Image (cartoon, rainbow, N blue to C red; front, side):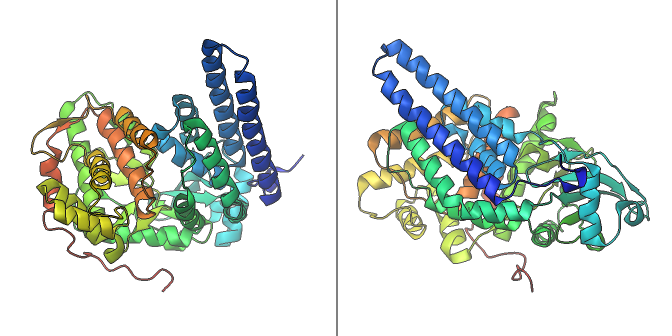
Length: 457
């Protein structure tokens, strides 16, 4: 039996073997099921299909929890986009959003000693041996600096970086498995996950680099420096390294709990600040905190919005994405079809601007992602089912057998938008979102308000 201090994320050999076994079990389940379905009545066939989905979703979720690391991250990403999956997959994969089992204090202490050169009892005035949160790549502990500052210390699991490297090498296999799985479920062979895999690979490689996370946190801190309604916790570089990062502690309420508040005005304030934070990041900074887990937001006692965990921050290219994206939004709000065509063409989503069907398809997509802002009137998210609307959108394209082209820059943007739709729905937001958005997008893309230096310089 391994000692506590030898705990680590499973290595590449184990991960490859378990991923391969998972792929084989899922594929065999669907293949064998299809054969047996020929001998079942229609009612029995539907029930058997449902059971296959449930069984395979559980297999996938359990393996992802066991392997932690990138596999669990991918599961969390899929659970955010569960609208395109059968309901059983969505519900079961959402279990990946909860905390993972923490590693022992002895393991965490060893990481801190190796990374910062001293044990936690020497570095900090106090250090909790019990984690306050545990995730796919690391866990967080409360601590106090010798000057009395309350902080949180995020510690990366041993083997997390190797798991990322191994999983990235296996990502093509995983993308192929998911592609075949979804193609079987929805009955369409044209689903292309290459851009998705590339984007996930790029950001997973960053998430084990805590120096990069500190860089991301400091970018957002500069962006919001002039605001009094968003708080970005300070990074304590003296107590941070490659595997450990220390932030100011933010005392507040988890976003998921805050959205249950009985006061409608309180919920409306949270919605306004989430919306403003999103558009300020995108239209003033050209970047986006792209991990919309409710645990990554805090509502402080005075109502300010605290943002946490900066391992996944997307920095967009101005000419390739930001300018045409802003043109797309502005043109849709103003009904300027010519400008909309130019923007969608520049984004690589519209191949033939003169094709009326392709143009109609793009308008359908744009309208879904412009929910609530197309008209200058109050929009009730309490009555809008973004999940049903997403399923209808996906079903439309699958039935028409016209799969929209994948665009890398939209992967994490879509993740955040759907996350916000969920929060607005939970808050039962009844707001004029058009007026919230207008100040940010009225003039289109105007350039970054902060300088973004190359990472590492």
